[in-house]
View 1 (tube, protein in one colour):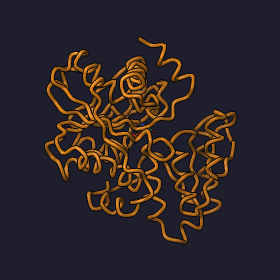
View 2 (view 1 turned 60 degrees about the horizontal axis):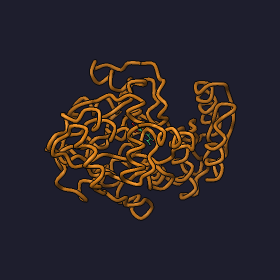
View 3 (view 1 turned 135 degrees about the horizontal axis):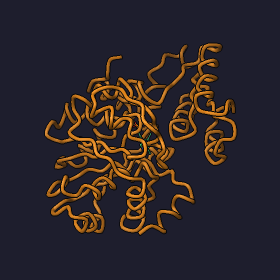
Length: 325
Ligand SMILES: *Cc1c(COP(=O)(O)O)cnc(C)c1O
């Protein structure tokens, strides 16, 4: 599978222009103070606020690009996905905006909040199977039977090109950045950041972050081969158990570094977002900031763009964050 190029990212930007939020890139004095206290002398942080993107996460950029790139006949056959999280919400949102039928297969007994959110966006929810693998098998079956396009969460060039538009915006909003820090699940977001930085700002380093409780992409990148790993992180957007070919290929060429943080580091970063930046970040959304705090020397003296990739935190998650120290 061929990764997208910068021309695909520019085409994506034209397609989704006006349909996505040009999210702010904001500096906070209190956040800088906390980062410096953690040991990153002279570091300044700029937050890219994809937590306030439609559906509360950056993924909607990719979903809209994918759907708007389908021809009318393909759109008429609809799409099908298996997911409970931000991927499902992004596709359901984009499907509604483009008048496309969207079916989301979830395992039996899903998180009711997420099921409700996807239904509220107008998608048909099918509950099938005890596990995600069962749900995927059923989604494949639906796709084979109806001709609907099965949309995976990784290995989708149109999703990568769409989410890459967030990096294009950020580099325009703050041309002085030295480093971009991006959270990784399947790797689409980091891959998009790498493609854009390499094309328009080659001196900007891209650093990826994963939870050490779900380190498949990190370990695949370090080893140079696709690996499966235990998948136990609390941060849903980062909960992926294997490396993917499309994203690893680009990360191998362009990524400057890949850092790990603990789930507790992530929870503390969520708290700091709440208290120092009045920002609601879900776990995955706080992972980039967590990496700056956990690896301060790596960022000393640099101007760092941290991608706050999503804001869909549950109440329980926020209570945990506020209770952390
Ligand atoms: C999906 C997701 C990620 C990880 O993105 P990938 O493109 O899968 O690496 C990070 N943060 C949030 C909020 C997400 O929804």
